[in-house]
Amino acid sequence: MLNDKKITVRYWMLIPMLFLSVSSAHAVTMEEVEGRMVEAEQLRALEFSPEHYAEAKNGLENARAYLSSGNNEQARRELDNSADHLALAIKTAQLMSNQFSGLVESRDRMQMADPAYLRDDLVNRAERDFSHVVKSVEDGDMRKAEGQAKMALTTLRAAQVVASREQYSRPIARDVAAARKVRARTYAPNTLQSAISTQKKVEGLIKNDPDAQVKMYALSEQGKQKAERAIKISSMGNQLSRNPAEIERFVDAEEARLRLIGDSLGIDLTNAKDAEQQAMLLRQAIDETEKSYQQQLKDSDKVIESLNAKLGTYEGDLASMAELRRKLQLKRDAEAKIKRLTKLFNADDVEILLTTEADVILRMKSLNFRSGSAVIPPNTYSILDGSTQAMVMFTNRAVRVEGHTDAVGANLFNQKLSERRAEAVKTYLMEKLEGKRVIQAVGFGEEKPIANNETAQGREKNRRIDIVLLAPHS
Image 1 (spheres, helix red, strand yellow):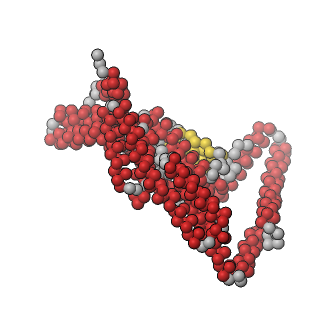
Image 2: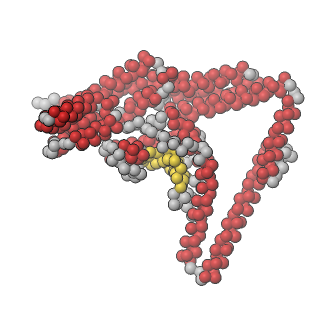
Image 3: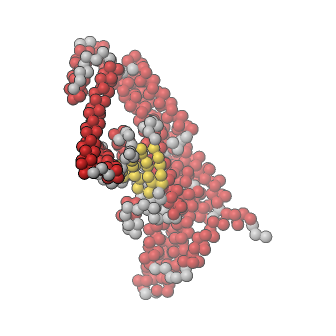
């Protein structure tokens, strides 16, 4: 009787073997094998299926050698062998990315962390445990791989905890200590306490959810800002206590600032009795400006209606003209804001597009995920931070995060990957905006290419995240 375990753990190998039996019906060419090699490398076969990848690469090199010596028959055998191992390497790499996505992404977080925050012994142990999982998957022993994956994940998270504490918690602690030195307990007690509470939240995440790196980063930035604010307030308090005459200079500077703002809106903010009254005056001025703007639009509508009446009123034409005017106005407003947006981004990092429907697309050109992974590289956080400012600028627009992939790999693999990446970016944006904006995440897989998938440059363009600020409907 056959061993049940062998049947269970090796069932997944049947698909690629069937694939090989079909593909081997014709002799593969050097170009085909080289193309599959590129696909395997893009799917990280060197990391996730090193044995099959090594055999495939060796077979390709041997084939080249035999061809150069005129031994075409042996070259064909080596190419067939290379193609067979490449098929296995590609299947194995996708299996690792799909079935062990949590493990792969935990390792990616560790590898993308600043080396200064990592402990070498934990990193080495984590890499060793990860390699055991890879070996078992290549051997087809999924039951063993799943057990090893639990052990590897524990080691990886231990390394993450150490790195995250240094990267996200310690900076807040240093700023809090600096705030205490300038007597923040006296001059900025509430701000100081808020910074301390934020640090505790970061510590809680590090302990209980070490994979929540995006949330840690957002909280860490908030904590540092609060501590820095406490330092600023306390430094001002110390300065005023040493030299009371500075109070007058401070009040003069504040009134000059308010006067400048008020003059631009045609109001006097300096005589307002408190901040609440200042805010009320500002709101009134903005409302009056908006009413004037709306009145101009109504006047334009009346002109359009009058012209249509003279020409003979046709309901369809009027509706069409009104919709055209609405879209034109949306585009003009968007174009004015886009001019300001271009100052937030480097053109090499973000491309800003305006569609015919007046949607604004922020194409994250420098947001390059690792293959098979939905971990946002930390060095791209600043780019996403800029996009949150754009969302604030277009506050009346719905937001959709779109994930797109190239055509390398299976369709289902790419679809799920694009969804995970879109969700990762959505989570980041929601954290930065503290949940104050509704954001939709959609994955399109390889369905909407913007370039040729047959070239490396084209595939790179197709692997993208688009943040779409949707124009309001009529």
